[in-house]
Amino acid sequence: MTDRVTLFDIARAAGVSTATVSRVITGRGPVSEEMRRRVEAAAEALQVNVADRGRAGGRQTGTIALVLNHLDWPIIPDWLAAVHRALAGFGYNAIVTASEGGSAVRQHCTRLIVEGQVDGAIFYSPHGETYTAILEQLGIPDPQHHGRGSFCIDLRRRRGFYVLVDEDQVGRLAATHLVSAGARSIAMIAGPQDATVSTARQKAFLDAIAALGQPRGGILTEAANSWTFDGGYAAMGAVLARNDRIDGLFVASDNAAIGALRLLHERGVKVPGDMILVSVDNMLDGAYSIPSLTTIDIRVRDRAEIAVSELVHLMEEDRAEPKDVAVPVNIVVRESSRFLTRRG
Image (cartoon, rainbow, N blue to C red; front, side, top):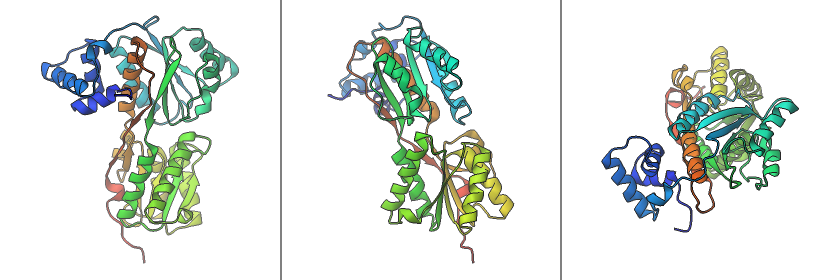
């Protein structure tokens, strides 16, 4: 194959997790004989030599830097926990460092990476420009997917790749679900407009709505000022002030959606019934809200595991240039979009 085959490709072909593929390739950790055969058969079909992939060679410090900003971003705790578990499985330690804050904090972050105190780095931020200066010092081309996923770097060879959320699929799933459920007066609560992921998600949703035959200009959009309960609450109030007959709502994060639900409850708007709602993230809180949230699962834990697995193998192998990995998403249907009753 001319394109580089990723662990995710092998795992999907074998019907197993990327962790299982990693254990087969590296020989680290238990794996059943049946799972081993499935992975080896899938790798052979994809023209991948498992033995070659298992040869190590890039470990120096045994440490990976996790570079974050916006530590209050709702998905960060789940992502961090999954990354730590995955790194431990490969025998790596993690240093968590923030790229936001004063100049001293940023200089420490830059020094940690540029001076080779770690073997690799994973940048995760809704703001891609956060790490532009660091990449310039490393001589790594500026990635084209600013802020749309985690950017993973092999620091010894100065090369990196993205593990991406398929935002176009997010938009299609949300738009299709709302329209097929009968929503006609649709609004969107987007995320903060200085975050790349927010603008990408908003564009994807509006494009999907247009593809379904509804004019983009007919969709009321309101940007929340944060990915929080408060942000969603305030944005929902602004939406209703502009149009109190909305019957379909797409919210760009679960936390903001829960805040919006609170405001709707206070205003006497029934969800579902008067309005149906779809959000994004599939956070645990959304399964226990009232109503529970229909949400697009962006597979936070899976993406963390894939980022670690691919980065470790990139660092420990001499192989072709890396490529980005786009992880598909899916919709989890719960109470917030179950039915719609026309208001008189």
